[in-house]
Image 1 (tube, one colour):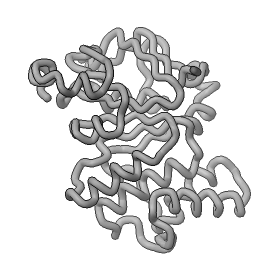
Image 2 (cartoon, rainbow, N blue to C red; image 1 turned 30 degrees about the vertical axis):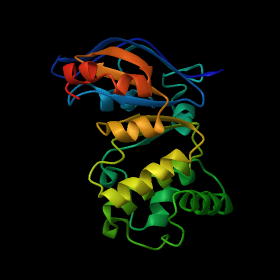
Image 3 (tube, rainbow, N blue to C red; image 1 turned 135 degrees about the vertical axis):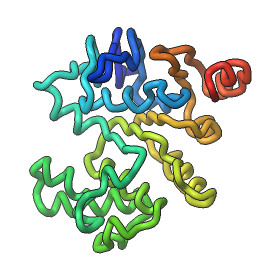
Image 4 (cartoon, rainbow, N blue to C red; image 1 turned 90 degrees about the vertical axis):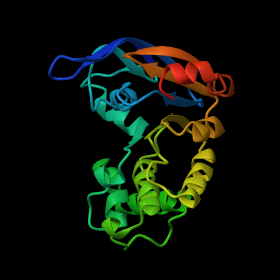
Length: 233
């Protein structure tokens, strides 16, 4: 099985010098569904931001064998789709169509191909017919779906999502979990929502105090009450 992500001895510090994590080693295979859990400040979001070069730490990150460097950055960002926790950080265009088309347009695709990418991405998240809607006027659940569509329109091989169920009511949460459960790409979810992680992920990685505390089969890890309590979960 091909390695989708390989991280070796990764360290990262904030600009003030305080370390977020040190010596992270991690491998994720193509097609895996992995949950990244941990208390606030554990570095979950920071780790996701390293997967497509938004943040750059010390030592090695590889995506499908490509080293994360300036020469490979464009290709890696096509292959790794990152969905932020707050969809308002991802939706900045006047309409839904403009938001979902932004990535394909920057890939210099033809007009027809851009239109097809937008149509297919909106269909995949159950938002067909929303093309002319104003992104800022959508509900929280609708914005989450459109934010995911902006990434799917790039046809990524890896989908990395930060806290997908945050700020959603129970109905929206259930619908989003069902949506994510249908994706066939390599899926990485950083979240405090342990029930959702258990439903969607086969493997779990527990981050705390700047390092990987434990990793293993999702059901076994999440049922370990002592481990969860010791790590603020």
